[in-house]
Length: 473
Image (tube, rainbow, N blue to C red; front, side, top):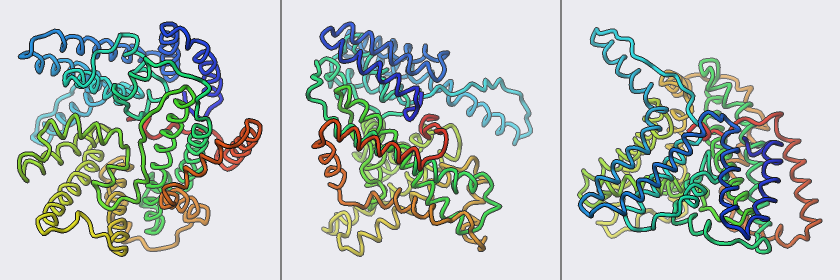
């Protein structure tokens, strides 16, 4: 079920009403919210609802087992629990990828085999709720949280605003809110409306337009397009994926706010970043923190010297790339960010030894850092968007060799790029001022204003709504 659809509007209207009516009876509310979230998930394909339920069962069994075993066995138990939670993800996402690469490797040495590929559709949201389930078990193991009541855990994992594409919410962030009774008189409707309608604008107007106008045609057949079209398609995808994913996150956070829940921020003007480390502090922030806390730091972080730190950074980013998709192009994308971050880490160490700040803060240096960082990120986006290394290579070669007319680079494309990327360079408090303005409007005036915004969005956007990009991850 897509957020920007009539189906979701009807679904949310029913859930919103029942949610507030059932607040005085917590058990009934939890059962209803689990059922509603399962309906939301089943709307995509009911055959995979069992996977969501299985994640909850495995997570709770693992958390309870960790608390009951002796100290000497806790690490073994948490390892088994994490492996069990990862098994469905490995099967659905990586089984065919692994066997295909084994078959290709054997073919290169003269051995032809036919391996049993399954060709299953990847269940939407599996990566996200698997990571949430893992964080819950590990946090219980670390004694950062206590095992939650089973109903609370199932609400936490299945809560529909974050279910299919995040943000990745920790147990320490959401479980206490599930146990708290909410007051409908204290809803921040202005902020919720600002997030939801801003997210709809980014998805329907910016992302969908750039996808159909330039990104999809160029990446579908880069050999048919000029250097300028390829350049602006790369910039276009940078704007598209930001507008698409941050738009989804904004809607999810806004919908949760209307139900009285607060999700962590997931984006903070990522294209204003001055280094790749800074970029990952601003892009998909809940995933960045998850990779840091549950992968990079357990590997040793930066505690064991330069070589080990470099290896830990590379492993973390390569696995982060593989998490996005079972393709070598995603691994390459992770590798670009891993190498870039490792180089940046060494550079910061050298500046620290010289008694210098991490980054040069002179205005010219700041914009130079942003320019270089943005274009390294765009290089990574080429591999992220391309369906193969061949397509990515064609894009990069023709970027410098195919000079000629660029009919796809229209004024509207340029406007969409300026809005999609340029909005991130507005003052940090610009969005807050807009939110405060909405919060001060009376209900009738707020309804009229939002109706006009919705009319503008539907008028500017294309017919139909494509799935969000991160649904497939």
